[in-house]
Image (cartoon, rainbow, N blue to C red):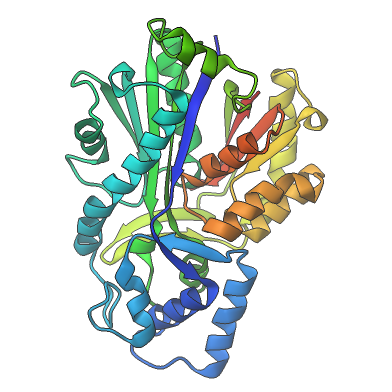
Length: 377
């Protein structure tokens, strides 16, 4: 039987930055020791305008203090060290993850004690005990829940987490899996005028998403009312995962990277990424879909991770898609920014709420350069 998603929840931090806020912050960290020249500030404004991000949410309220030059801000005149950034991650990530998890459990109508496996996904922070134990204590989850962490895999990691969930439920049809992806990308704003860092600062944001999944109904002991609610025609579509796949693009190891340095985690994003996607994506994807008994034309909707507007354009052009099919991805990028691993689940949630019909092809890119896909109906 296929892995079935019974509930999907998302959460955003309360502090919202508009494009003007984000540009001012970018100017402060790009040139922390001087007032940026008018030409450089205009360049930052142009990059932010072209990023496709209209607004983003961040966990740090004092982030906006940069506009007034406050030295009390987390990102003051000097770049915070990795230790300080990780301390803030350990404080801020668990409550944000908890909000997404509670929303997913409520939609699924699954009590916490029914969860047998917990999968956490993150690449923007690490601490132990971590988010997984915080969720166990707060919900609470059973003490014998099986915990697995998918770490440092970047923007496609939610799809890796789905594959792990499918493995658990395939081995144990009675398993009920809770998956939570949480990322605090804003903690890793980078100082300096290097192009890749400026682009990353313009794109990334904070968010969390969670889902509850099992094979069939989540519990044979659930009430008839709850079972009927899950099976009702009004329930969101795009629920069943029927296949997943992965491609490591040849000779692409330098195209996308994610490294831990002394002042946070540093993203490397080569301008060659769209060209690599254009060259390699379609031939592989057509072969992979054929193995599942599908063609590109048979895909009813697309959930493509918005790594940036050029990446979305490369996917659209490479696969010959109607640009309207990628609008859910562009709208999430516009409203929330690139939140790394939770982003794809935000797109899937929008598709489900809009009544989109499958088959749905979910796709994301990560360090490697690696492509991850999942087929849902």
